[in-house]
Image 1 (cartoon, rainbow, N blue to C red):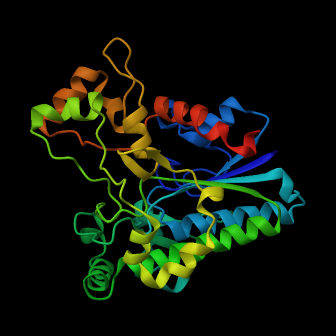
Image 2 (cartoon, rainbow, N blue to C red):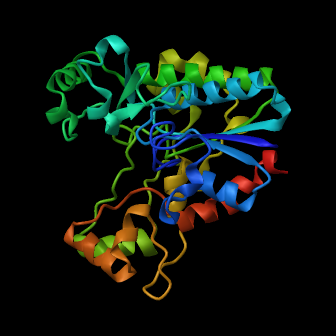
Length: 341
């Protein structure tokens, strides 16, 4: 492997590719925002890493960015055998609308940067040729889009309340996943995927990790000592297909074992992603040896302060895998994949 394309949502990059930074300038990120692409580039400098990740990206945007960058490398003369791809799939619920130049007066790029995806590099400035407006969750009621652009917000909410359904999004994701696999196989590109968290579970609210209810004072021990995650061990191929019957033929086209890494624990969890892995495998943290579980916890500077904020309800019980734990994930999981051997 000489070239590695990484792609995903905010579990892959804190900044937006080709908006806030170029594809290969991500190593300038602050150390607390180092995720798996940073650690791969740092620990294996002989590999050229291109980070196509952008916060809020849904799976269709992730697939598009991979196909775009891989095609550019192939056309530049790089043999497919020298290229590998790692995808961190987000969740299939996310939606993006393309804002063409003809719509920029209705949704100016500069006003919507926090919702923008524009991964192409052939432009003089971000949004020059249009951009993708990203809705990270189907229901945008608690987002600033409600105040920022009422017409777009109302349109999205109307779509969400009338015709939105999980199965359609699931079908679209599997179609794009199959496109990526076909392209990679055609060009002899190695491909491996993992997930933000369980992509199949009906227990997850729009793909968001369920919170195991506890009294406030019990939350720190639940998270840091007991390391409890939602039990999905009864989740079989049959239950997935029964939930999405029209998608059965698409689901069975994908060699999940070959192309995907899942975090599985007997009698505890099945089909997990990096978030479940992080909760179950995080580096123990103390005030003397501070290893925040999530990137968001960096601001609290001590384990005592994190636990205090959790009890008081000022901190969330889940967030983005922290830099120190992403280093562990990279070393203990990613580097064991065939593409690195």
